[in-house]
Image (cartoon, rainbow, N blue to C red):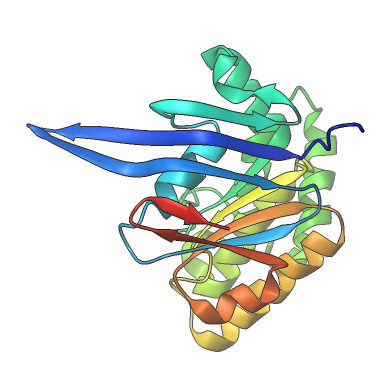
Length: 226
C-alpha cells in the first residue's frame, strides 16, 4: 500500500524561547497533518502558541526540534534564500493588523508581493486589479489605506495575500479587529477562496469563526489536539 502524502506534515515540532533565565516552551511536541484544499482553524487562547505555530508553518520561525514538511519538502533544510523564494511563491500571509503601507495606494499595496517576481509592471497592475475585483474593491484602487474602513483594509490585505496565486494562505486572527458583520463578510470571502482551491490555515480564538472551516486544531498550552 502506498503511503498517503499530505500537503503539510508536522512531525514532533517544539519551539523554545529564552527570556533572561527563563525557558518558555511556546510549542511542545506537536504532530499533525493538513491536506491539500482543507480550511483549518487553529483555535486557542492568547498565549497558547497559535501565532508561533503559524510563523513556523510560514517558514519564518525555525522550530527548536522536529520537522515541517510542505509538499514533502523539509522547510528548514532550505537555505534562508530558498525559504524566502518558497514564501513568495507558495504562501500568502494575512495579518490581524493588516500591515498595509500607509503611503501606498490600495493597488500599490497589492502589487508589493510581485516586486521580486520579475513580472512586468503592466501585468502586475492587471493582476492586482483582478484580485481587487475578487475582494470587491476595484472601485477604490487609488485610495490610501486610511481612507478605507477596517473591513476594507482587511480585504486589501487578502488581495495582497492572493495576488501571486499561492496554494497556501496563512491568516493570523483576520477578523480580530472587525465588528461581527464585517467579520462574517471576511470569513465568507475566505471560504470562497478555499472553494477556489486555496488551502487555508487560520489562527483564531473566536469559536464562531471555526464553523467556516472543514477542521479545527485546538492548541492548549503549546500542545495540539487535532
